[in-house]
Image 1 (cartoon, rainbow, N blue to C red):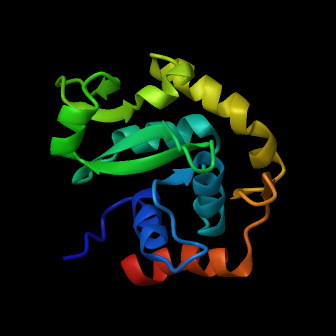
Image 2: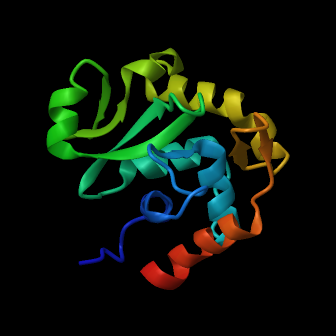
Length: 165
């Protein structure tokens, strides 16, 4: 069963995990990619902080995890089953809701981002301000630089609104 009320960032991860190469992802999506996707979908975020707070405040059936992708060496947002997170990520930084339940994890390979939500946001904002300001939302692994979305990425992004809304 499809959950139509899931946030776009979650749906985008699903779409790109199911995509054909070279668009298929194995881990998650970068912060600039998610911000650019929301802009393309007509629901832009004003800042990285707004995105992170949106992710932290999402009620989904998995936990969001911010980690440094070993393949592209950029921070990505991924999702993981709750049971796995509660066991595997116990030594990582969990952010909890007011009831004390885990709602977002920063994995140990991304610990340099900080141990508070404010530090995480500040560091992600600093790290990705240039590509976001220049609207270069997609990371080219082969050229090791940020670039515009290509047409296929745009179509995959737009499919989230068409197929999951």
